[in-house]
Length: 429
Image (cartoon, rainbow, N blue to C red; front, top):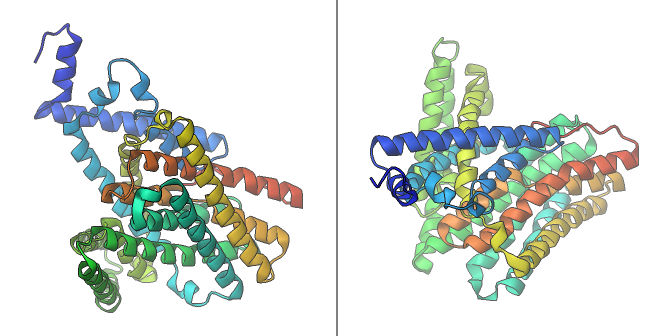
C-alpha cells in the first residue's frame, strides 16, 4: 500500500483490493447501490413514475455518465476491476430470479383463448416495431451485420409484461376493455419476442450453420422436457408437501434449484441464462404452487428486488450518456421515434382494425409501449453476447427509459380527454 497521504497510494489500494479489503468494498458497493436505488425509486414514485425509472437512473448516475464526471476517477475507486465479477454475478442472479417471475405471470391458458382483437393487437405491436427496427439498424449501423439488425428489431418489439400488469393494477384498469386486451396482447407479444431473441442469441453464439441448428434443436428438446417432465414433477412436489408447515421452505428450495438448473441448461446450449429461468417460470403449475405455498412468489420477488439494483449499476457502468455527442443524440432520437411509432401505431392500429373504439385503441397503444426492466434485460443480453457495444447500449437504454417514463403521462392525458379519472402511477417496477 502506498503512502497514507497520497492520492496515488489511495487509488492503488482501492483499485487492487484483496481478501478482507475486497469484501469490505463489496459491502460498501451494495450499501451505496441499494440506498441510492431506493432513494431515486421512491422519488420516481412521488413524481408519478414507475420505481424502475428511478432505479435505472441510480445505476446510470453511479457510472461514467455522472459519477465519472467528478475528479479522481471515483467510478474506478468504487467499482474497481476486482469488484466487478462478484457484482456481475449478483446482477445475473437477480436477473434470472426476475425472469422466473416474468414467466410465472404469463397465463398460457389465456394465450390459447386469445381472440381476434388480441391477435390483431399482438400482430401489429410485433410486426411494425420489428420492421422499423430492421430499418433503423440498416440506416444507422449498416456495418453491424444481420445479428445487430435482428437484435435491434426484437428489442423494439418488447413490451414489459410485469410493468404493464402493475400499471393496470395501480390504475384499476384490469377489467376495462383496453386493460384486458393489452394484458393478453402483451403476453403473446413477449412470448414471440423472447422466442425471436432466443433465435438471435443462438445464431450469434453459433460457430456455424449446423451449430445454430443444434442450438435450436436443444432448445426445442428443453421445452419438451419442461412441459412433459418438469411441470408434472413440480406439481407432484407441491401436492406432496401441501399443508405441511415446511411447505414454503421445501418448495422455495425446489423452485430456486429448478430455475438455476434451467438457467444453466440454456447457458450450456448456447443461449443466455435468462431464457431458462423464463421457461421454468412459464411451465411451473402456478395454481398448485400458490395453494401449497402462498408466499413463495413473494419470497422469490423479495430476493430479486434486493439484487436487481446491482444489475442497474452493472448496466450503468456501460452507459455513457455524455459520450453520445450530437450524432449519438440523433441516433437515440431516431430509435425513440421508431420504438414509439412502432408500438403506438402498430398496437392501436391493430385494435382499430379489429373493432376497438378509438379511445380504447389509444390506451392499448400506450400500454404496449411500456418497456421497463424487461427491455434492460434484453439489452443486457445483447451487451453480454457482444451484439451491442457501449455506444449502442447507451442509445437503446435511453429509448427504454423514455418510453417507460412516458407511459403514465400519456395514459393520464387520454383519461383526461375521455373524462375518466386517472390515478397516479406508483409502485410499478
